[in-house]
Amino acid sequence: MVGMSCMNKAGGPKESATLGAADCLSLAAAPTFAVMALLTAVLGGGPLAMLCSAAPDASPLTGMIPMYLLMSAFHTTPWLKLISRARQ
Image 1 (cartoon, one colour):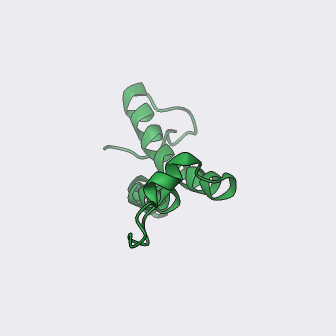
Image 2 (tube, helix red, strand yellow):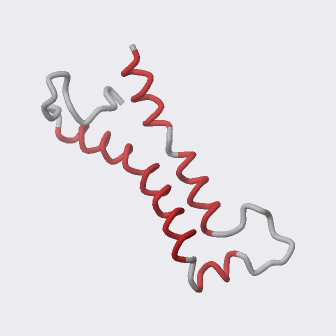
């Protein structure tokens, strides 16, 4: 990837719409999964949560909330790249 920001240096949108859309989409994954984890924790997982935690001796990472949190953590790379480039 060339750049990780949806905006150019002047504050306007990037010239390359394809690259800008891909960069913005990659930045959307981590917060989306974090919000999904929060909503699942607050509102409950519903019938699918029963399926994910049916085994009594399952891993502590079983369930929808840990899954969403792990997915959010795995998708933080674009954010870390954006932050490191902003500091330079």
